[in-house]
Picture 1 (cartoon, helix red, strand yellow):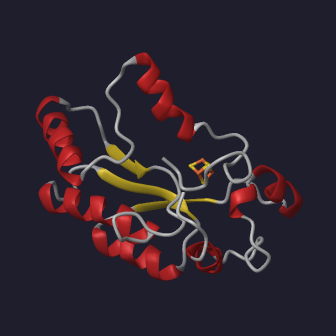
Picture 2: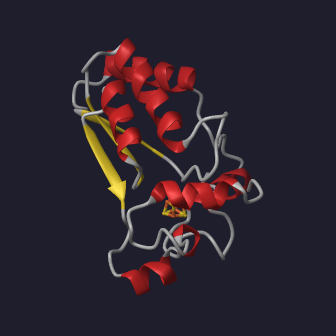
Amino acid sequence: MCQYFGRDEECRFCDINEKLPAAARRGAAYVAVKTVDDVLEALAIIAETDHEAQAYTITGGAVTTDLDGLSEGEFYARYAAAIEARFPRRWISKVVAQALPPADVARFKDAGVRIYHPNYEIWDAQRFALICPGKIAPSAVMSGSAESNRQRRSSAPRM
Ligand code: SF4
């Protein structure tokens, strides 16, 4: 799930928040936030049975305020840290997240992430405003300042 929620916030091309209700309608078991233990359990099966996989990607929706009391960088880094502690360098580790401040990128590196893929979505400022309305803040537009965006959002109601 992404904390940019609803037509005024979700990126126009994205269906991530629709996946959960769609899965529920199909009767499929699907949880919005996987626990670290569940991820490790799944990877243990993969480590035992798969000899093809070379990499894993940690990704999900944007954390605009906090999730489990963690910022987006902290939230995704904890998965990488747990995976790399259990399976050190078994796969190439990658995080796909928002364009985050340098401290979060350092956090990913410290957790063992080898590839950080920030989502800029679209470079053109006018199109960015149209396509990613939730990511727009007067002080953050195309400034690379996810931190200022987060500060703006931290005073907003939790989605
Ligand atoms: S921030 Fe990412 S997950 Fe959230 S709506 Fe935009 S593309 Fe989808």
